[in-house]
Length: 74
Image (cartoon, rainbow, N blue to C red; front, side):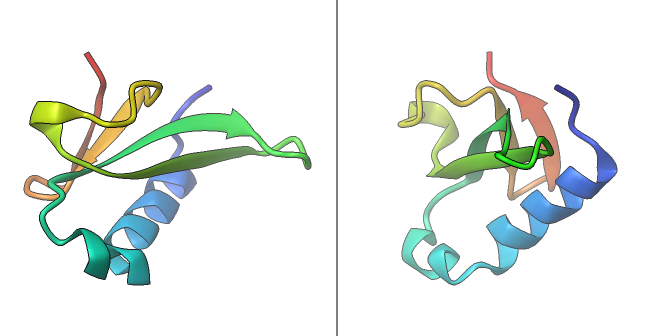
C-alpha cells in the first residue's frame, strides 16, 4: 500500500489538530500503519508515540512533528 497525498493530508490533519493531541503534548511523532477499510479504501490507524522508545511495535510509518515529514519505521 502506498502513502498518497490524500492520506498524508488526512494523517497530518488528524495528528496535528486532533483533540487527542492535547493529551500527548510530549509525543514527538505519530506512528501509524495503512490498511484497507471495509469499503476497500486505504486508511490509517495509529497513535502518538516517541521516536526513541516506540510503543506501537506494529507501526510501519511515522509522521515527525518537529520536521513535519514522513518516514518508515526502521
